[in-house]
Image 1 (tube, rainbow, N blue to C red):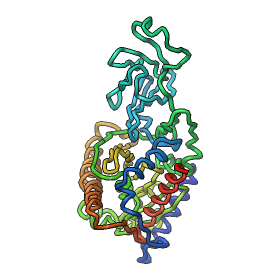
Image 2 (image 1 turned 90 degrees about the vertical axis):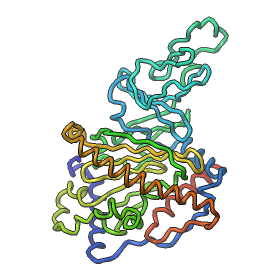
Image 3 (image 1 turned 60 degrees about the horizontal axis):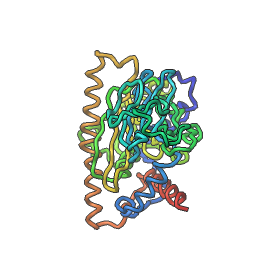
Image 4 (image 1 turned 180 degrees about the vertical axis):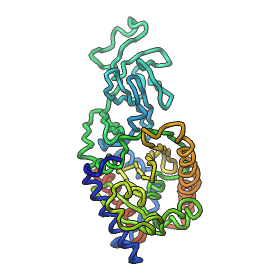
Length: 393
């Protein structure tokens, strides 16, 4: 974790922890202003889902496509299927990042199937059309058979903008757009930098598809109301019941949950920046689909990608400090991955999301209701609605 001298972000997160500390000692809980309700159709209707895809995932919003450590050297190639868009992020010989659509301009075949690989060029496995890592067409076998086609880059790969911030790779997968992550992500970037995401590496990335709407998965990370019940035997022994503090920054969110250890520590922890992370569990929602959860020794970066109204792709990267990505630390990271992904996320959160999706099909509810311990859920849905209706207008 960087020195606290960097840190407007530290000041903000310390203030959140101090408020939560005061609430915990006083036996009170922070409550939102009002109950909110969302129509069930927001999770089931094909037209609404298509509007979300257009407004949030095929627009100019910065989306997290991976972590920089997944492109460690020149020649690295990372495949990302972002909400139905087949994409590649590459690092060329000079170390620069490029974003290209993973589709050959000849007959449309995907160029790369592996999640991550190293290649000098991008060659289509169908007919051998070959492209530079920045997307420029390099070679066409038997080029004389295409002598009537236009040149001047007309058959280069389709490009989209990508940048690196806080150790993550951000892209806007709509060709022809511009990308300003500093404006689009605001103070969240500073938080992630202070928490050390740019000095981390991916120990393991776990991906799966689940039978639920993408928003049901996102909702699991926006409230602490469910921890005592859903996570009773996994992480509830480490966390206090429904004790959280939160802030909104545009469409992005910060939340902090109290760890039980904070009750046993003297208030002197306020003077040690590193103890803030040890004693309080922070999560950052980077709208629309990334959540970064910090644990005492590592972080979870979760990306949620919509496939269909009732189908979602889950991608979870375990981020560990570079200097602890070593064989002697590997058993600790293996144990952490087993607890968080296999048990907490897969068996508890994602199974709950699938159960809710099945319940929505029953017609028993016309709305889902968010209480005053769940105010971030209502805010998230309002931001989704504003984006969809704004794009339609």
